[in-house]
Length: 122
Image 1 (cartoon, helix red, strand yellow):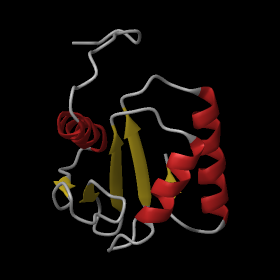
Image 2: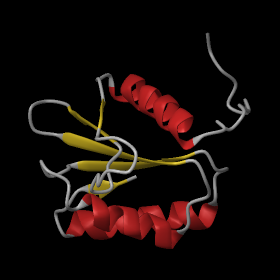
Image 3: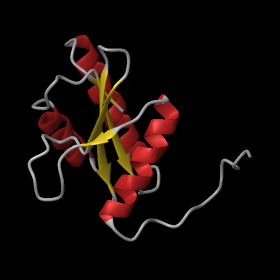
Image 4: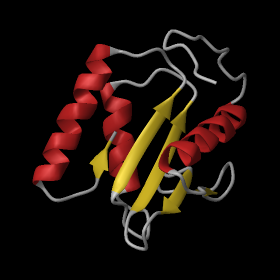
């Protein structure tokens, strides 16, 4: 069944509920099984869930059940640098409405990182 582009869904009440939902959506999008990284309260190096796609590509997910600013995005990318094995892609997923300033910041960060031959951030 096709879902309308303007469909609205309730925001999950807890960060854990949002993390489960977002990880499931990412798994369907990338056609892979993501593993949750540790548990609440543990150091996760900025990655809540990860998957290895083709034996080489490693995707890391960070979930935010709140608004994301440029500063939050930059901090998340810096934290994800410590994840092992090194990421090739990093996706920050948020329950907040789209924000053009944050989207612009994400594009700028990704362009800068690609020039440096580092993982791209979405």
